Image (cartoon, rainbow, N blue to C red; front, side, top):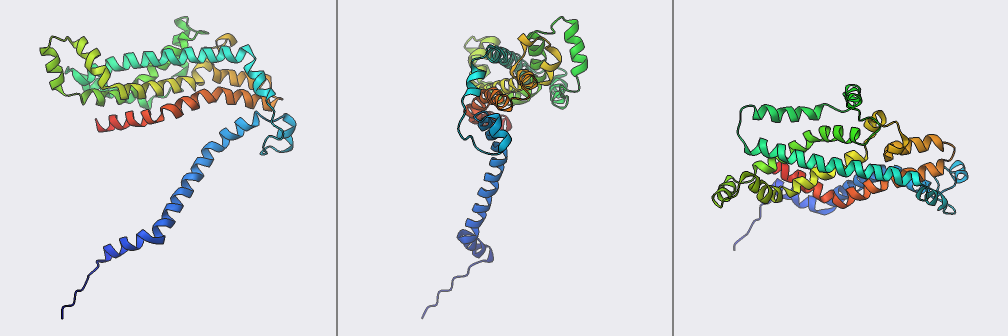
Length: 293
């Protein structure tokens, strides 16, 4: 008579127990914490958006209530005003121009640092890395004096140029690993085929680093769209205001009309939220590639 004995290790038995109710409880706890964080993040945004569909009397009677009935006049009044569209256009011009400048200059600088060997290359890279620890709020006063001396106050150029400069450190840190990961054999093969360094840059480097380029472009656009402190110091003319400044000016002008202020704020932040929601996977993919590189 043969007796077969199965010996289960303590580690295996613990894994077996974890596959039952304990694992389900852990999953429920994880989902609960995740939903709690999501609610904390979405709650203020939902309050602002829904507040634009309410009247001032509804907000006074029940600040946390839902629209009853729904009021569309606040959003229609904002959309029918020329001020909102002018400020929206200024934000789009500043954001697109900043993005193009950051991507073009950052890609060229990153290519030199990643692919060329010269004295001081590591020091130059460290200088850009140190720029991450130098916020714009620290340099706002000398920066304002510099922009004033250049005669760029009350113009979008006075906002765009500093935004490009302060976005370059992040751009270089992200793009350099992408460009270093490109095999040297590709450059040698392109050189044998008669391609110049510029030809190799435009034909090979730019397409291969496209995930990182898209990532830094999105970050630059969102940073420009949400910029407040720099336009606040540089722009004094209402015709040059961007949306963050427009929200502040609109809130001061219509301080007693809370519902309309909430509607203006909602319309100002919705483009950035939609833009980020559409491209969030590309941001994550670009940052992952930079870490791997």
